[in-house]
Image 1 (cartoon, rainbow, N blue to C red):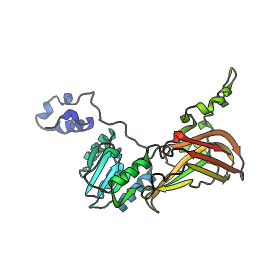
Image 2 (image 1 turned 180 degrees about the vertical axis):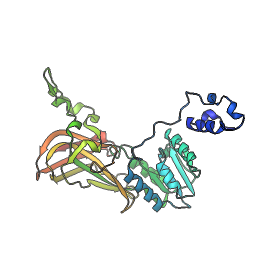
Image 3 (image 1 turned 30 degrees about the vertical axis):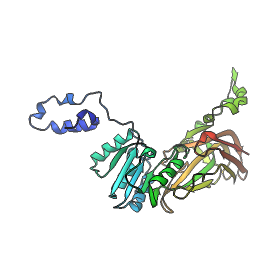
Length: 332
């Protein structure tokens, strides 16, 4: 008999409800079977991707198109299991949900309640895991607020070389990266501290320490509803494909020059991206799209006004493309 205390609280409550209707059992003190201190062995679920219909639909169509019976499939950092469950509906031969966090408990709980028994749940970080076979398909969403800050490129290229069969698919594999000057809504603006002046104190003296400040001070996470508008028509700054790129395939310098199509105040450069499974299936993390709940990284700048038809030029140096703390940027 399994140890009931090892089951999530929800499972025990369900069990108690079922047993309470049986003869004799209803007379037992089942309340004590479920200690009040026991809770679901998982942190709070991550809801933002599930609340994005376009993103979910793109994943559903991608799994319908590329996951087939007879294949071996791995969901890299499976989280609460959405990608895993969509792939499971395609009945692959083997399906591995690999995650090193307690979110794996949430995915297992949902799988049990939905009768999904064709999934191998593996409690491990994928880059430390060696399955018994090569994969036909790798699923992932290693997407950080700055796209690269979750280690997507080096980690997926490592998994590609170790785990993927020749001709296998990485879903998603294509990315277009946008770096666009934005004006934030007034209520979302947070000025640099050296621009703050009060009746009894002037913080402008701190500007001399600008170069010594922690690099993280010059970035922040923004949401779509905090962006008032883009000043230029968005164009990809660069693109890459995880199935074909090399380890050094990301640029270390981006120079952009754009005509201003809607005048306003530049409060920073917003980093967002388009994610594609092929030429037809994609979703975007963009301030222009409704129901985009994902965070985007703002590369903060001193606010400057631009008029329509002005030319806006800026440069971003990516010393280490996978670490936004090493990036430097400036408007010209």
